[in-house]
Structures are given as C-alpha cells and as structure tokens.
Length: 107
Image: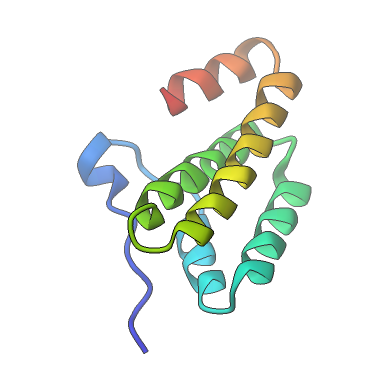
C-alpha cells in the first residue's frame, strides 16, 4: 500500500500546518467517500469555533480538490462540495479579527 502523500504547502507558500488534517483526509481516501465525509464532519464539529483549525480544514479541502481533479473527478467533486460548505460556514460564522485571519490565510 502506498504511503499517504505529504502536504508540501510550507515549501510552496510558507504556511506552516498546525494540524494533521491533510494526512487524516489522505487516510480517509483509502476507505472511500463515506470516510472522507465522516472525517470532515468530525473535524468540523470539533473545531468549527477555532478559526485557525477551521481555516486549515478549508485549506486542506481546497488542496484536495486540485490534488484529485485530473485523476479522480468523483473524489474531487466531493471535496469541492465539502469545501463550499466549509467556506460558506466560515464566511458567515467568523467576524472581526477571526474573519480577517481566515481571509488573509486562505488568500
């Protein structure tokens, strides 16, 4: 079985990950769409009020869309729908400095 891919975002953008979400979703991918949805739901429920962790969820979902876009359109579409939900939640939930952090970090 192939190892879970590393998230090379730090090398590309300078952003240092603070969670294991990228790896968590990579593991979930091996078990299919239900596992990906479950991973998202659990992470959202636990961290929806923590702007830093929730921002990273949104970033990982976006990264995963592009990771799978050309090779597995079904998984890419799933990640896109989760990303849209998470992005909408963040834009409507976070205010003030938290929203500024979200927008600045995801830009």
